Length: 411
Image (cartoon, rainbow, N blue to C red; front, side, top):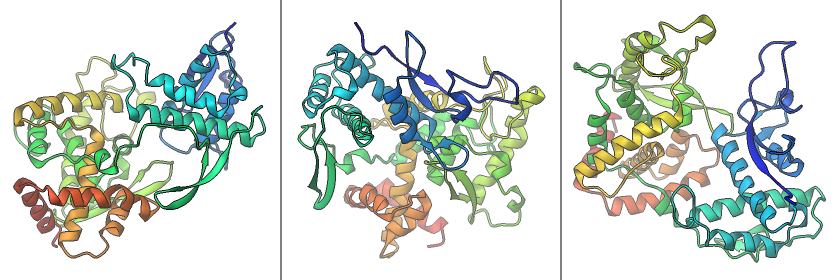
């Protein structure tokens, strides 16, 4: 008999009083967008998985809210579903897991065909899923729910002592940080920009939203979730005409983890956003009913097949971005096919390298502020080595891009 038949469920927002205010008896205390797991047979939460995901993703202080972005909550739940399916296949509940069974789970993925790629799971996927599995089992152990205690040992990780749960589990070697940090070459940026359309201030046919959002991500370092969460009321439009277009202002965005951070926004880009809001966006939201009204900047086009004027989704823009990236890569003969997050890496790497070229003895501190990293070691860990690699391989176009960046900032 099956132990688990897991299924991911997303908590939904509840409006008003006296309405059906619960989902599976839990949603009144759950933030919208929190993903958890139920058993398909009963539609009741699988308690061990639910408790871990709650502790992992929901802040218990004040009104419950997500600690991170909704897609992170969903990814954690999906990883845990994979572990539950493995546990079901070997007929062992999570509470009976051992270090050997974690190893078996890791090994099973190297022999399993992914339904998405039709290839065996990549090393990165195995590392990510085993990491989620280990965190969930460590949580259960700390709660006294594991039947067999799993070892926790202090080991050296990159020269620093660290407590590691299930340290004997052998996993694929993590890729070098440099391999994970991908900037978009300037030639590819220019080609993608041309494919995505025009800017709001440029004359011509076609819509400007996709080009504008691409430009926004590349010039602010925002994650796509941060860019799409931006509201018109967040923009200091009153500064237009009062500030030099080559200077910048700062806006607040909702960052990873739910906290707010300041983002540096060039005045020239603020002017472009203003034109988009007054024209293309205004036409798109004109027919929304009062209860559909919202303040998001980037919206579905006026003539969209579905939900015209509604906030643009990350999934929709990723599809648009990938189509443009594939076409641009083919045109310029590039092996690089970037994602929207590559815009953030490009922004960080070019600013890091520009600060170094300008003689800043601690470029990580500047980039830390621009990216909103709470800990500077995060910035240095991710971008310091990568920036060195970047500088060593800078093309003439890259050098020209850096020179332009420095001159625009008055450095």
